Image 1 (cartoon, rainbow, N blue to C red):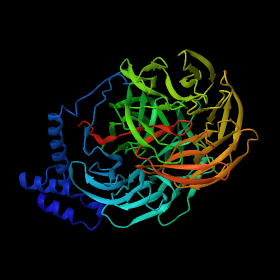
Image 2: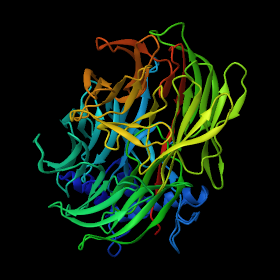
Image 3: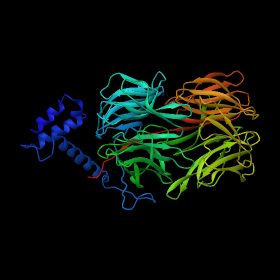
Image 4: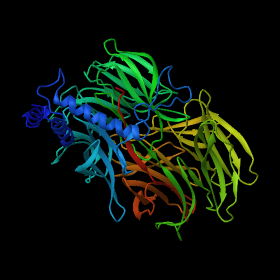
Length: 632
């Protein structure tokens, strides 16, 4: 009888009534053949027995690997009293996962894997496979993927991506293979209840617009715009919505109803990314971050009242996450299983050279290698380079700036170990000093000047409030930085860090990267159009405040810019998930010329003033999916 039940379930007319894949079907058959019964046990269906066998088998594997179900770590002061944070078990082993989604029944994974040709060009390959391994089914290829979500019934995967034609938006991919449907220039779709409708985001001038996208339609309904929105998550019953918004110091979590009325708010200092609801709607999960690493937090929610309950608790032990990709990092299944991406990002600092500006440089030698974050700042004369090195800091790590003479190999200490957040550093245009920025909560961004000749340090100002992000230096050692909303540029006085001028840019674009001219009168700019589908190259006159647009071009990501001493501006951008290209801008005419593909993919570049020397911080990613099953 149990074998018959399994076969009839596999032949069910309605897809939702069938098994979710070949593996659960095989489990049901195996159970029926090895444990025959004359009648079903009380209240236990063949599906429940198959699931029990799967959990039992997984438990045996976990026991042999150190006990996934019972393993726990309680580090620092993050865990709530009595809370035990467990580690997940890796369910992929390819080391190339850049994005993923877990089915609601926790049986299948949709994976975005880095797929590279012999020539080194890489794409994101979307495929589906069982969580316990087996043969994967390739579904689609994209230049890059940013987010994935399964439909509730497992029929398709909605992928936020850029396709081979350069279209950005959400694509609907059948989980059985077949044509890919472009839904529009929307991103991060959330299923609305059990329907095929999606709550999606769309870029609009200086804000993100949320709205409902119905099947077969292209226009959003029930929309609302938010100027500081970072992320969102719709409750399973579609009655409540979590909004994650930027605040002056900490992310703000806000619960709203479907009429967009605020029900409750919560300041979340350790919030990092990707909120997800539990299937019952009584809890929210997100990835948190502190000085000891990343972990998953749970916050109880009173769904009826629309209020947060208690304090967040840690539910997944701390883990490392690759820092080079922006895909989905967390998923929560109906049974409480938690999936997340873990991995490392080794950095390799390489020195590059070329005979003259206007040609593609080549790699000269490897300077430094470390696992984790790294920034490099080559001096204007190209003879030395400062870079950030990771050093021990109690149970965690901290950044420290060091200075390397490229000819002699002699290192000097630029800064002590940073106890606070290292933000950025920049050489003065004459190369005599390095100015670095460190953010201290409730104080602001402290600016320190390190003299290259004497190795002496002195504070040169504090910018109150938010972290500055990125800084650029002018000849008088005043600084430029991007405004908090990325729609303006601020000028900070030398010696104080006080904002002395704000340059507003047109509402049709943002600004992410700058390159001041050697004489300090102008700055080349690069940023995104407000629709998010193209990069905008322009120039700001620092005297009049007028901005001029030069060119719009496709890019998967911004890069770096440098105004060279020969009068030209060279900049890099990421054109595909694995390709960085070098361009040259003539600021007199606005002409942009492609110089070629740079030899080190996944890298942050930094050029000397004459353009003949450069550094490239290469990112090599090793990333897989881990799965934590709930205790039974």
